[in-house]
Image 1 (cartoon, rainbow, N blue to C red):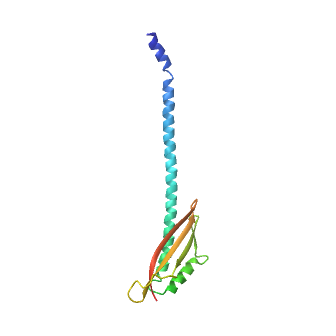
Image 2 (cartoon, one colour):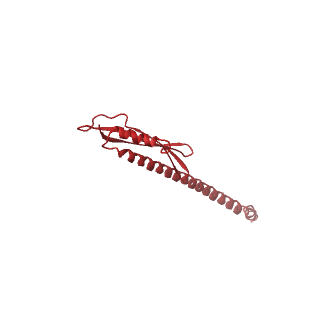
Length: 145
């Protein structure tokens, strides 16, 4: 009988230790969830900036496609216009996107019957998102020589 009373006396502090361990486990789980949440927000912001870069590059590609069916000199004029100081920077939501374009210099040769020739064009958009990011779109434009 004396042994049972001794056992009960020694067990009185276990409830406090159990509660402290439970709180510690919950705190670690909540810290992990908070870290995952902040990482997800960062990925979402980065994806948004990347989407804006694609939209900017697509706008410039559409400008270049306006020369489709014209001459290669028209392509070079549009490339020069895109690369011109003042036209090669876009600022959206506090982020500066640098734009560069190239094309109209080298053809792929006569790929079509007649006098139509394919010219590759490329638009590159750079921005700084904690480190330098680059988005590049390429297409081909059919021109008449």
